[in-house]
Length: 199
Ligand code: PRP
Image (cartoon, rainbow, N blue to C red; front, side, top):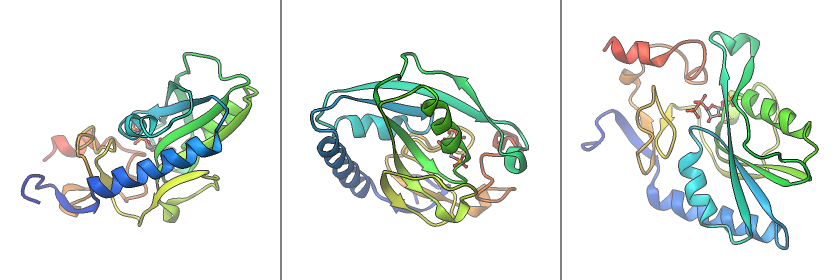
């Protein structure tokens, strides 16, 4: 693409994304009618999705954030740890976890376990993207934007070494841009900034 030379093609256009996010917002508003909900955004990738989703929801809602990281080499161990906790207690609240993408499912499984221990009133998950081919642990998704193939996608919040989060669409990175590592393993086991610096 001329404007984005590192992007091979657009997978989900801005129009397609915006339409789907509005649909998700309508469904969520309908399902939580008469209730309040806390949208818990998992940093950082989900913030763009969250910003659009919350404006498509009509029931009273709060937002909170948490962050996790995976240890280097965790592709085998699946070790995830909390790096930033919620600001408010989620106890007795309707919590809707907002994720940009579910790959292996390890992150979501870990966060669901954490929140369940807080005695929430209800716990659901809204993910924009799902890559079922990468799944290592089953996780239920209550609201899903799109199921996508196992390709390296960026944009609309998703990054590669902190780049491309600002794309208004979801695009597939050129394979030549990705020097090493498998697609499913993209965020695990090595620091992609090393790869970029080597270019
Ligand atoms: C991404 C995404 C999920 C996680 C999914 O985060 O936002 O949190 O990976 O992967 P999994 O299903 O294999 O566990 P990432 O580690 O890229 O961090 P970021 O959101 O800060 O970019």
